[in-house]
Structure formats: structure tokens, C-alpha cells
Length: 278
Ligand code: AMP
Image (cartoon, rainbow, N blue to C red):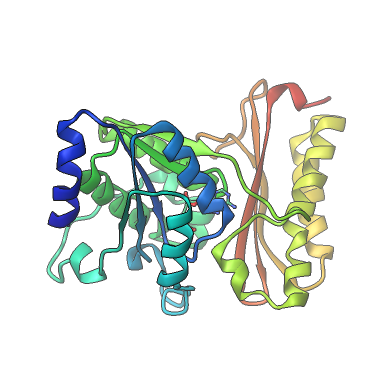
């Protein structure tokens, strides 16, 4: 931590800008797109690779989460990232640490309802990373739409002085959103996982046809329930900032989560107001 601060002090003195890309490693093209965005925005790019125990619940996959430090470093070298921050759990969380950041009510719904404490863990680690790196820009992926909504609040409510930048979802050619958890999927499950992006397309089509949110939600859920090997958690049409009911004249975020085998996957699709029919 001190080492990282020391490395960043020189460019800071020279007035260079710093961009931060927080990740949990097992990097793929989705992550790399964030690194490229950070490279474009800032002089110095810091990528953190840290599997944050605080954001995993009991019985979740913290122990088994894919880790590939060597592969990650190789990929990051190709992207010309300047600094890779790989803290240990003990360095990030001294055993007698008692203070964390609470995500509040936005952290209790959808992903937060299924994964209690998840967004508190996210807010705590991101706060620490912001304090350690003091970035001018921090880049996050739209893939984790509720995380983006929570972190925008974090920046606003705790007065962080940085630009939170959101990069679009990177997908495989067949539509599956890239995710480190896709590494868990068998060939058959990899195919079944297409139900998530398929369900979002179904919702988008219904919204552009009828503009009816309830009908879109119903059809999305039915699509997932009909899909083989898929156990839906939720499929909903929400306001992208509050995750409450969407503003009648505003954008709509379609969100979906489902188990494919023992792997929990999420996806989402933002529908602009002009694309809402009815
Ligand atoms: P993770 O390592 O899963 O915690 O993700 C680190 C960052 O990469 C988060 O901001 C994610 O939203 C982002 N990310 C993960 N997958 C994708 C993707 N397919 N497209 C864009 N961003 C992504």
C-alpha cells in the first residue's frame, strides 16, 4: 500500500492524471475494455486485482473464484497498464478492522436481496481503493449495473472527488456477457447461459412493441422458466439509478439473474426512453 502510494507520488507531483480499474482478476476482454478506457482518459493507469472476501456471502464461491495472476499480468502487459495493485487480504483488512461502508437501501434489492451484505463489501473495498489510489477517474463496467448505481451514490454521498466512468458490456459473439464466472460453465451450460441475453432481447422487443413494463417482465421470466438448465432469480424492468419502478418517460433497465447449474450469472440491457413503445 505504501509502495503504491510512493509509486504514484511522482506522477502526481508532475500533475499527471490517474485512472483506476478495480477488478477481481481472471481477466477477460470485458476487463481489458475498461483498461483501454482508463488509458484513453488518464496518464497513469492503475489496475487492482483483488478477490474481495467482504463481497462474498456464506456458501458463495470466494474459495473457488477463478484466480490466475500470471495470466492477468500477461494480459495487462499487453494493455500498457502502468501499475498493477495486488494486495493480500491481510493487507487490505487488518484482522482487527471494525469499520466498513454501508450501501444503504439500494444495496438491499435485486442482487442485494439475493446476496445480503454484498454491496456493503463492494462499497468498503472501493472506498479503500479510492483512498489508496486517489484516482481522477475510476472505470467500472455496465455489466454490473446495480454496482454502478450503488457506486455512483457512494461517490456522491461520501464526496469523492473523481469521475466515475461506466463502460459498456462486452459480449461474446453469440451474446453471452463476458464474466469471470463463465469459466465455471461446462460446454452445455455455456449454451444454456444464452437464456440470459435471450430473455433481455425478449423484454426489449416487448417494450418496443407495447411499452408495457409488466408484460415485458412477465415474458422475460417465462422465457427463463422455459429455458433448460436455468433457474431464474429475477427478471425485471427498473429505473437504472434507483432500481425502483422506472419513470414513465425515462430509460428502463432490464435486469436478469439466474443460476446455470451452480453458477450465478447476471446480465442487463439499458433501453432508452425513445425505444419504449406503446
Ligand atoms: P469483476 O472482476 O467481475 O469484479 O469486474 C471488474 C470490473 O469489470 C467491473 O467494473 C465489472 O463491471 C467489469 N466487467 C466485468 N465483465 C464485464 C463485461 N463483460 N463488460 C464490461 N465490463 C465488465
